[in-house]
Amino acid sequence: MRINGNANASFVQVKGVSKWFGSLQVLNQVSLDVPEHNVVCLIGASGSGKSTLLRCLNKLERVEEGEIVVDGVRITQDKLDVNALRKKIGIVFQAYNLFPHMTVLQNVMLAPRKARSVPRGEAEWAARTLLSRIGLEEKADEYPDRLSGGQQQRVAIVRALAMEPKLMLLDEITSALDPQLVSDVLSLVRELADSGMTMIIATHEMGFAREVADKVCFLDNGVILEEGTPEQIFRNPREPRTREFLARVLEAEKMA
Amino acid sequence: MHALHQVLHAFFNLHSFTLAMPDVWAGFRVNLRMMVIAEVLVLVFALSVAVVRGLPGRGAKPLRALAILYTDFFRGTPIIIVAFFVGFGLPGLQLGYISRLSATTYGIITLTLVYTAYVTEVYRAGIESVHASQRAAGRSLGLSYGQTMWHVIIPQAVRRVIPPLLNDFVGLQKDTAIVYVIGVTEAASQAQQFSTQNGDFPSYLVAAVFFILITIPLARFTDHLVAQRERREQAQAF
Image 1: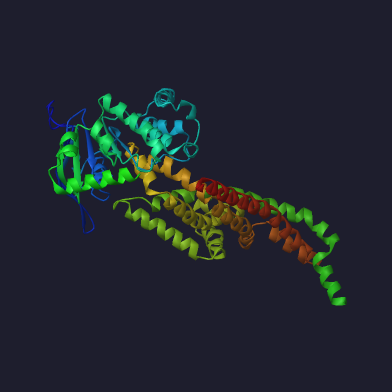
Image 2: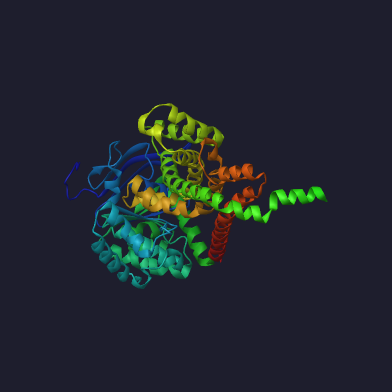
C-alpha cells in the first residue's frame, strides 16, 4: 500500500482538495504538507473549513476532488480500509464526545481492546498509566459527567493516545471550555508536541498556535489563503484578510 | 333495588370469587409463562430488526426493505388475525415439527411476532436519538460499524427507551389473554368456563385482578425510571 518510502516525504500530503456540502463549497483547492513530527495550526473564522479539513483526513468526510496521502497511503481511493487508517490517526473533538455510559477507564480502554485486540489486563495497565500521566488516575472509575470540561477533554485526548496514533487531529479542543480550564488542556498538547507527535490543530488560541506550531495556515472561505511560520503569519501577514482576522481576534481577546 | 342486588351478586359474589380463584390462577400461570418467554424473545428480535433497519449502504437495501415490510405488516394486522394465522394456519400446513407445537407455543409465537414489530420502532427511535458525534467518536477510534453500534450506540439507546419499552410490555401482558381464541387454556378461558358452569361472573373479576396486580408494579417502575431520568437531566442542566 505504501507508495513511497522516502524519508523526506511529508507524513500528510493534501493536494488540491475540494469539498461541497450540497451547493456550498467548503474546501476549495486546498493543498497542505505536514512533515513527520511537525505541528501545523489551522486558524481562521468559524466556517472557514478548518474542521472539515480535519474530518477529511480521517475520512469522517468524503472528499469530492483532489488527493490526500497519509503515511504513504492514498486515502482518497475507493477501496480503503478506513478502520486501519483511523487506528493510526487520533482525533479530538470540540465537544469531547466521551462515551457517557462508560467510566473514564472504559472510555480509554474500549478501542485498544476492541479494535486492536489488546488483552484486558494490558489495556487497563496502559490506560491507567496514561491517566496518571495527566493526573486523573483517581477519576478512572468515575463517569464522564462527574468531570469538569477540562478533565473530560484531557480524557478524550488520552483516549485517542491509547491507540498509539502516528498523527493527532485536534478540532478546536478548547473552544467549549471555561477560560480557566483551557491551560491544563493546552499544556498536555504542548507535551505531545515536545514528544514529537505529528499534529494538525484547528484552534482559536492564537498565543498557543504561535508558541507550538511549526507552520500556521490561515483559512478563509475554504481556501488556505496564507501559510508560513508563526513569526511570518503573526508578525508580518501578507494578506489583508489575514491581517483583518488577526486584528479582530486580538480585539476580542482584549475585551475578554 | 332488587336489580342492583342481582347485579352485585352476579359480579361481586365473594363466595364465587373465592371458588373461581384456583382454576383461574392455574390458567394465569400459563399467561405468566407466555409473557416472560415472549418478552425475552421480543427484546432480542426487536433489537436485531431495528439494527437491520438502520444498516447503511446500498448493499443492505433489500434487508432494510424486509425489516420495514415486517414491521408494517405486524403493526398493521390485528393481533387476533395473527393468532388465527399462527394457531390455525401453521398446524394446517403440515410442516412437520412446526405444525405440531402446543397451543401455548403458538400463542408465544403470535405475541412475539406482533410485539417485535412495536418494540423495533421503540429501539429505532432510541438508536436515532443518540447524537451523531458519538458514532463519529467511535468510528474515529478505529472501531468498526458493528463495534460502534454494539459498544457505543446501543447501550445508550436502550437506556433511553426503557420506559416506552416497558409500556409496550404492559400491552403484551394483557394480550396474552387474546390467544385463548386459538385454544390456549389460560386465565381468560378458565374464567369463562367457570362462569358458564356457575352462571355468574366473579371469575372474570378474578382474572382481571391477576392482570392488574402484575401490571401495576410494572407501571410504577416505569414512572420511577422516567422521574429518575428527569431528575438526572435537571441536575445536569445546572
